[in-house]
Length: 172
Length: 412
Ligand code: HEM
Ligand code: FES
Image 1 (cartoon, rainbow over the protein chains, first blue to last red):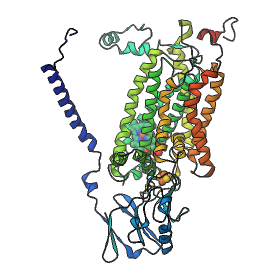
Image 2: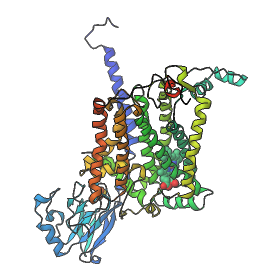
Image 3: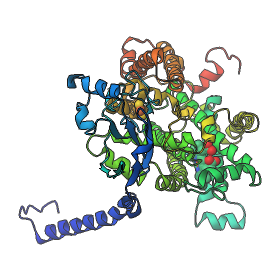
Image 4: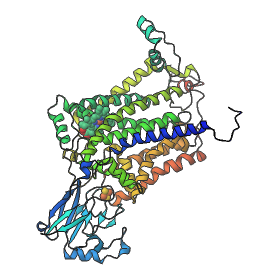
């Protein structure tokens, strides 16, 4: 073999590489189902939307509902809370977003109640901005649920939702 | 494995077996005649203690598994059923939950023994890295097990730890969803955590075999840190070290039994006797004590990705000790400055553990940051640079000389 000086790829080289490639593809396609079985299954993906009756939520109150296994905060904001949220200049925000983007219907703020740091449920009406305070590592959110202090990188996420007739809300 | 294989099968059966599978000879060479340095002290008994604890966790775990139900609706009740209805169920559960703590207590002593006596230095690097792998697997196993009782701390601990992966750029959220099997920690998560909690201890057992194999290639380090040179430096494993290890184990078991029978919930968290509630985080969540120093590092860094990186980095750094430490002298007994820094490091880790157990506010944050810096300074400043300034003490000529005294025979 040491004498072999052929630079031309031989038929054997081709067969060797082709066999290896087929083997690698075969192994990868056998491993994929084992990995993918851990992803959310069909019944989880199908998890239906959640409906909320808004007439039961008084001004200033936060209702927590469960959607896809997670808490969602439905906050009936007071005029003061709205005004405070709208007064903040974007330059002060870590994850800039206007209050109009966060709550198109100003009195209703609907956010996923999972701290964007490491997933705890923040406590409502607490912290220096009167929005939320996360007890786990001290993240502070304002009344538009925007991150203001602490380790969390993002604002609380917005779920997809729409308002229905009869003062109802559908999340999902 | 190395060592004189002087085993001679005597009975008909052992002769028959030995010529087909020489396993008795292997055991004989590894645990009967194996030559150990004669000066090993009690810090060397923790390897045996750890083997015992692994076996204890597997035995009590398999028994618990016969009664436990890995379903988010039933798990909490099934653990209470174990505590109240199953015969000796309370004993099995307390032995298992306190066993995990004792296991970690022993592994921390075992690791710090290695650092003090420089046991990670050549030629024991592979042995050391296998140990770090065992420790990582233990951390994973303990975390998965703590999720199983499905109390508030189980649930929120699992949420925070799995969310650590969401800090990875781009794919982080997909990985977290994949780990959960849903959009939050839920039934699917509990089920897979149970499957993995059952699996990992057996993987640990496999790595322990490799660890002991590597140990028997190089032999044990010893308090002087110098290699054995002649048979004068060693004693056979049996009876000298079987008895010493046995005595160490019995003392350790007294401590273990004291926890199990007198203060079984001392190391636990009262919140874990409240069933998991995905809509409410307890006001103050803390992991089990054995993770606290790393949890404190996570919280000391005011950035999500930075905190997660430093936390995992703080653990992985141990694997690089053989290359970070530039001193040719192994044992801290002969390194006057290293010895001081070693104890400062121990104090730093304990301090971080205390900070990790406190709420993240005010002075605790500042103290946590200072301690985090000193933690990393030990690895990146002290270990590589100290040898430039330190003048080691004179090493004894041999292990035997260190025990018996060279010129005038001393206390031997
Ligand atoms: C490396 C070894 C192991 C460690 C460190 C470990 C650790 C733990 C921990 C910390 C808990 C939570 C205890 C509590 O607070 O109630 C737990 C629970 C549990 N473990 Fe393990 N474990 C180990 C091996 C095993 C094995 C091998 C099995 C099964 C074959 C097992 C089965 C269980 C079961 C069924 C529970 C739930 C019952 C309970 O919470 O007491 N464990 N484990
Ligand atoms: S999870 Fe909210 S601050 Fe860490």
